[in-house]
Length: 75
Figure 1: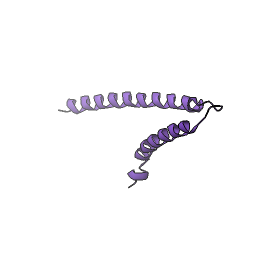
Figure 2: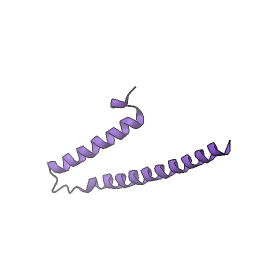
Figure 3: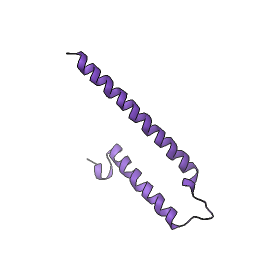
Figure 4: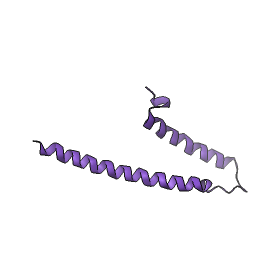
């Protein structure tokens, strides 16, 4: 019976590593986009650009709060 938990653990580890790689790829893409000022042209920047960035911020704050137990996820 010790083999089944090991297989389950191995499968969970593989799934975890795959999800971590997926997150790492998303973070790298977001960092590159941030480095490029989210594609905003300073000469044509408008309130729609600000609103889009605010939406991104709101979603990322939800993730950050969940990950660090802050905001509505604080204990």
